[in-house]
Image (cartoon, rainbow over all chains, first blue to last red):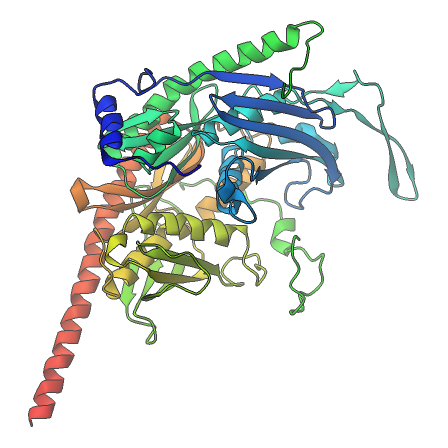
Length: 290
Length: 287
């Protein structure tokens, strides 16, 4: 996001490299950069995760609150996404500068999770028609070095996986008002089923009919148009949106959609395995921002 | 409610549209003779009506009707950038989609909602890759769309309306952009869905007993004749297999090509009328 000024020769070098199947950092067209995930590092939230994809750095927290359900969905909880682009990540984000990116990103996350199969919201219901749980997912962009959408979506899945919601018991009724008791036992918690939670994969069109995944900021400078595709662990496409100035041919789009399916299923398997591994570690030391 | 408009009386704050209290009507998409509720087959499009030049003050304007969906679009500019905004060597596109309060069965609040803003952003994104921005340095083109009625496939209709109005305003473009929408339900692709079909899908989703795993809606905005077909806007929501999505994309492309011919015909007719009027005016002046 920070201003990168590439000369035509430098752009040419990157684009010609991709045509030959070699990227500047030695990756293949469908390779991701090094990814780090840590969950449970914010003690004040019900769930949290930090994702670092090379220098891209995002922190995602999940907090639960109670609310009334919407009248047309009396037994469904809600999931709401908020994005904050910190001015630390890029000076352009100062003030209202990051608002455009933030709304695009939160709208994309809303669309990604809009299908009820991706996340079962009926388990967030406490009293049908009266009280449901609302999960506020706050996304903090700490550093932005390309491929923000993928990093955020992986982080959201990890944060939801790590979320522990305290159990809420209805203890009685007083004059029509229900009384609740929140369990104070830290181990008496509910988890969220994220086995169908989707992730996003961004394809950048770098030159005619050629796309790459996980672009670096330099590569993003070479090709302004990208298509963001959401995919579930079972390989279903749950959201798709074209971003940036520029156009795709239908053939390129079709190829990108099919690649997403293969790649997405692989990433989901790795992600789940790593999250399980982290959870099974005893006395895990939280590294946080050290 | 995030921000309240204090200048208007909004009515009782806690009122709820009565249609939400009704149980969802369980109708299937196709009736016994394999036609949709409005008598079409799944591959049929709705009736379209296009016209240009209905707003006299605008540089270019258009009116698009697709089934019950009615939108009108006005294009102003290119003109100087408004004071306070950044100076740029390429053109800036300002898009505003406004849904009128009566455009849906449920009344919409007069202030622009999330859906308006999201559609405006998506449309702006698409138009920026359609207009030749370098032709209008330091200037701004405003595209305003008013939705009179949302009868389904709204974003697609907005794209078509914007493309037509831009052409009417003589703005340089790579090609005219047209929009199309496809709905996937129960293993069948429904081209150009109506509002009932879109809503049916949304209601069926909330039913926890619904085991239908695959569904989705796809909106495409494309330039059919530019470099053998370029997609400027593609948005999908729902949950569908990659192969089905690719099939939907092909169907939407076909529909775009059909609409493109209609747009071209509308513009040609408009030019013919103008030429005729001019000729008559000259003849009138001579005599």
